[in-house]
Length: 337
Image (cartoon, rainbow, N blue to C red; front, side):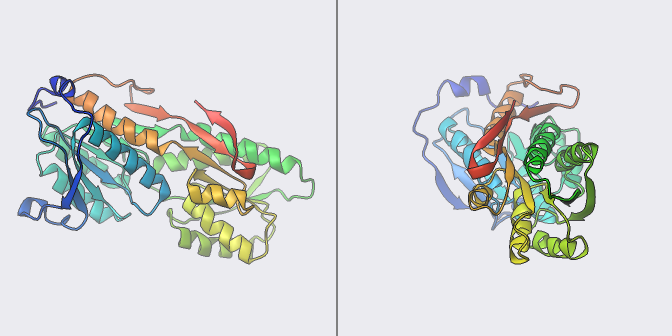
């Protein structure tokens, strides 16, 4: 890892009240393609200052809004210069923006990728410049990243399945048919939660009658759910690999008058919690995206200091964060890790 500055010494000189100024993104040839989406956050100058690039999946999703907020707050309190980029859930924008951040002489890069398939190229470009790179959530695309921070999706999927089965036990009239809405095929960790859930409910004697890819899009999930209930009208529960898709599904089911179908999501967004309280959803697994954001920055700084992060899977450079199952009435009914 490169050390342009004495980063350890840097942290002993930070003042508590860092001022944040928002200015338009750079527009020189080295930053072409992100003039509208990159915001530079400038903190008081330090002789040992650190520049960190941060590329976020989207700011239209509450989950990523919380992640973005926590990372920015910590950067501000530490006096770190943060260059941020919003991918807007666009793979080409993600690749373009990350390349531009790398070109801006950053010390470390943190990415929450909308398309993990591009991460191998982004990681290679970062390492060519000796820039450590931390991936937060979604997946690493098989890249040789320096760290991946993600919730334990297998445990989360199993927890949601167990809760659903406990609710269905109380209703002897339900059918044995279920449906699943999946994220993008490249979202490896979302797939893990879906696979774990499917395994658990099928072991309990249920049938997955329909599986559709809605690619984390609420409106597409709405359309796909309308199609599913047309061909599979006896579905008793629907699982979505994230909350936006669960919200789209609940809207379609509500319009169709199918209020008895249980709907479960994953992320713990405020919109999903509200839907649970209103009776439109049955549960969601809250991933601690704020903790993910903080850990993303913390891990990047550890790597800059040539420290070894506390990996849960050292061979894969993975750090797991916990989660909370939110069930009936919007109350926490289970905690993982």
